[in-house]
Image (cartoon, rainbow, N blue to C red; front, side):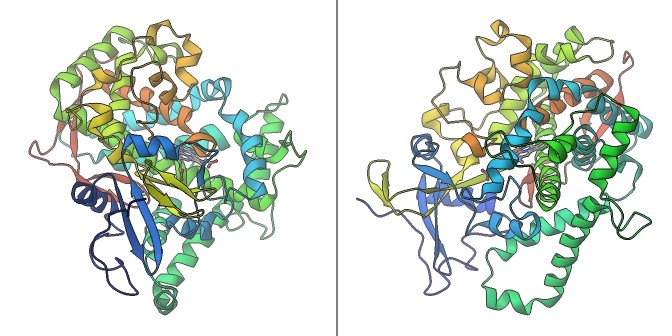
Amino acid sequence: SEPIPSPPSYPIIGHAGTGVYDPVASAKSRRQLREKYGSIYRLNFFGREIIFCSSQEIVNELCDESRFQKEVAGGPLEEVRNGIHDGLFTAFGTEENWGIAHRVLLPGFGPAQIQGMFLAMLDINAQLLLKWERFGPDHVITPTEDFTRLAFDTIALSMMSHRFNSFYMEEMPPFCQAMTRFLIESGVRNQRPSMIQNLMRAENAQYEADIKFMADVCDQRKHSREKRGKSLMVLVVVQNRKSHPTSKKDLLTLMLEGRDPKTGRGMSEANIRNNLITMLIAGHETTSGLLSYTLFHLLSNPSTYSKLQAEVDAIVGKDALQLAHVPKLEYTQAVLRESIRLNPPAGMISVSPVEDTVIAGKYAVKKGAMLAVDIAGLHRDPAAWGDDVEEFKPERMMSPHFEALPVIFLVCVPPDRHLRGFSFQPNCWKPFGNGSRGCIGRPLAWQESVMMLATLFQHFDIKFDDPSYKLRVKQTLTTKPEGFQIRTIPRKDAP
Ligand code: HEM
């Protein structure tokens, strides 16, 4: 076997703190490293080794779940566990609670459930439109912030029947702020040796306070009159029962009443709380990132902008958006697929071999080794995508079979499934992760994003505030455009 390439390193610290890999700009570091060392290279942080992989050939192997499983230990996700423990996103493969929660919650993301969220999604969507309309063309808008409000409020309303009302707040909701600080700190802690970590008193106190605050919001103990009152989860469901005797089957109801078909067990109260926070963590920054990058690409590529607007005019016109429009917005969906190819908000996933093995026919890796999939790198592998990888071309994402598929399939089946009908190579597009540990929320994010783009283009002409803006990236656990600002001009012929 051959050695895996690696930059020069120091004794003990390895590559930590050397500037080779910057934990608060890791997407940028990965780009520089793959340009210099190729599609597989090795880094070492205080003796802990991570092997980064970005070619379709290698990633395709890593997606084989019989050989590789999601790795939580040793990466930033292990730190995120401090806040959400064995919630779906951060559970170890061996933890029983992952299987129970996965089987109990999966039906909550089925086609009928996602379609049933249409009105709740439209409610929050309308709040954003109204805000931008009221601002008018003279106001500079930071879309990332309002898309974060949109994603955050949409998850809470459509899945938990809870309103955060973040469009009515000047600042981001306190829960959102606590979560963002928590995620940034989790990423940084991952690179600090524990000896140094223990000395960082102020950071540690803030970190603990943020974790407690998030848990308290879910329990709503702080906000309820009686200190030991019922938790938010229970209250909401009881209220729903009173007003809708037929019982609403939202995510919260599944959490409280669902039984795992395999073990017959339900979710514990702690596990419910961990998964409530998990959904908000996993779903709001990613969806906001997707929408923000998409807007950036559309503004940077005027022909795609016009094509999308023409599609919205032809399909939605001046009507109120309906669920039936969503699957017909074919070009809009191609735009989203291409945007998330170039800028996947979740830039990295990690797996580990279940046995000692050899990858790419020549690199030996041990059982338990940490292999990181550099998703942005994968999405730019010229062997999989051709020489125009850097270009924003939604046309490459138009399926020849698209129109032949039944409507329900298009709305709710994970978008990468459509891509299997293409001549693409397997596993070359992985913005939602892989296999059983792939994103459970993707049909929700997808429907919401198509709806948002369609209504935005129906209502507004959109411009860069600064036409010379060049994409900069801000990173927490995910990435988003930084400093990206726009102006929106209500369309004269808007509905
Ligand atoms: C997992 C991306 C939206 C909930 C994942 C993973 C990725 C991802 C890459 C795999 C993580 C890993 O392997 O470590 C995205 C993107 C989104 C999005 C790009 C939006 C564009 C959402 C939404 C929700 C959600 C809206 C919830 C409502 C989850 C959960 C997991 C997950 C619970 C863990 C699944 C498991 O391991 O069982 N997501 N996500 N995501 N996502 Fe998403």
